[in-house]
Length: 251
Ligand SMILES: [Zn+2]
Image (cartoon, rainbow, N blue to C red; front, side, top):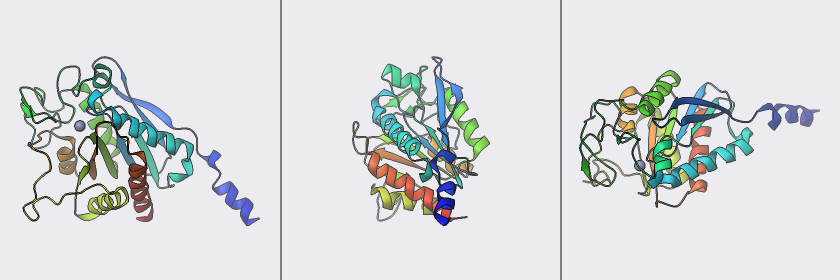
């Protein structure tokens, strides 16, 4: 009787295949396809491929995570909706470029207090107009920002490569979630400003999504995979699972 009841309660058929929605359209006309698993009130967003072709391993990683949670839907706690956008920059992926079709960098176009029109790219090269003529100038940035503001996720993981470290808030709930991810995944999580340690990046990034999210009050981390090719699905799956159980336990 109890076993039968548990079977009904935890039946995998109670959860359907991921719902997919186009949250916007790229400059070359490709959909920005977001997959949703579960329908809880707390959203977690996994974001791949912001830097297109050169960081294609982040697309492979996020597709791997999508496949895992599609095959194991009971792993998404009832309190959570897991939202997955494997290809944040479809034109960059198709063209083998880091940038959008208009040459604007997807992680320099966000309207935090540090936005600048001229900016350093991920290879520490200073480029005119890389941040766009104004914040949120690219339709892809606008679409994702609108979705984030409408949804207000409890946590966002933005995947890049390659660096082998992660950034994230240290304080409050955001700090607890970042810490859960760091512990489970084992990525190096440098302490800014402690012991003279600086950002591991050899340049100052401006107009980044992470700064805008922090100023908007949304908890997020940026994970730099260790190499430009490795997908590192297992350790990032462990990180995501740690965040999901932390959020589900938080009530
Ligand atoms: Zn990147």
